[in-house]
Length: 75
Image (cartoon, rainbow, N blue to C red; front, side):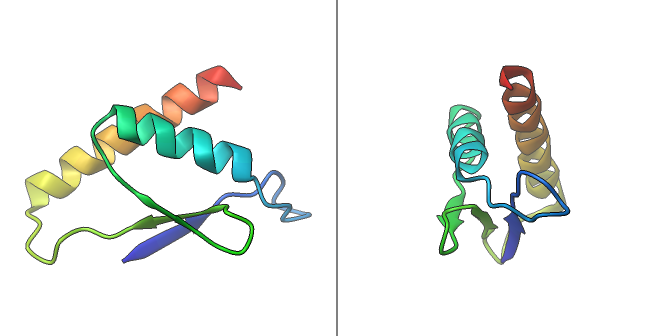
């Protein structure tokens, strides 16, 4: 499992729960399901199967990239 914490500003490390939710919705639209965690709902959890192939991992990353582009375009 891997996790990514989203913050509004790297210096202040203010949690960005709204962007985390937007990213989760964008990945859901891409057919990629992630988990949300953290005390401030600003952590994304990636938990692929232990049997995931390299091609499946690359496909998931492409979906996540498209979701990032969607969220960035909306801000």
